[in-house]
Image (cartoon, rainbow, N blue to C red):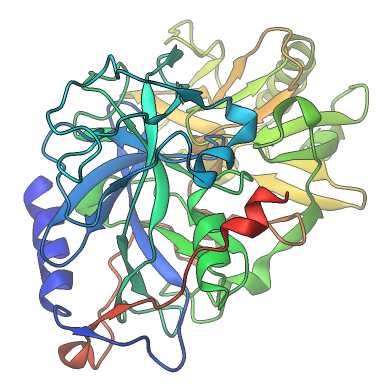
Length: 451
């Protein structure tokens, strides 16, 4: 699988290597998304630096991180890297993350502090403590910035120009093994509501495309194709479906949660299983997460949910099995003639209207071993988030976040339209003429400082 991905990325790089000016009509960006079968996490490979010193780093996708962070001390070196000093105005940007002065960094000792030598070197770095939600740890780090490479997607279908961004702010962290990460991952990519998330920084810096991004999480591993991260809006073409997939969207408003302002919350009014309403108190505070593998239901919701699911599954002649595989509590036998379309349909009634996020068997059941599948929802505790929609339930669903209008849009399963989020995208027909473009815009730091 690594050989396949490396060939794919090498082919893209070969398609565009020269340097030119920004094209007359810029387009949205696209990143490939890979599912790690061991951890059930999703990551993307980011090219960081300039043409002279480009480093490719694999970063786990997270919808809650205030800013991107990664290990800067295991092979990353870039001539365009800059450490942010504590006294710099840029250190004030993450005011809600409590940056601190670090006279002597304890995570990295470097010679020539204050010079542009190696990542992490500064007399007084802007110290921050990124949070790793996978292993529930705080890390020592410092804010820094560097350029990143992205591919445009001019027609919503094909890879186009290769673009070099303005400096993007992120956090350098010290050498550390991250428990629960994919073996090749070196950090986390922020897609949160924070102004320092990658989509926010790019849309603010370039100011040429909407403050939107969309995720199409793959259900298969990379040997069967890649998922997509679109930054800057659609159209979204997911062949063999021939129309713009945004036509399938149901759109609802996001809710601002003061206790966790970087995350994406929305309201679930009710849950139905094959049109039978699960008795719940309303409304239900819900959020999206790409680092939670399977949807978590508050324990009081979980009991009622499982009771109704069992009743509907019995009507469909689904047979429970005593075989249990943690963390799941309800499992069924898989007969030879069984189809995922036969599983009871789960509807989340979302937003202030009657919009439905419909969850079919492909996203509600997970095959855990030969002949056994389990309900892919897990029991939660008494956390304030009553429902956390996990990555598995978002697979093969196109999910768009509009940061400017604070809207969430989703398609439900694309498998109903004979397509998915696991595919190989073509290179644009004029790929041999593609060049690398440098975005000639500066980041509007004054805008963020005044927020």
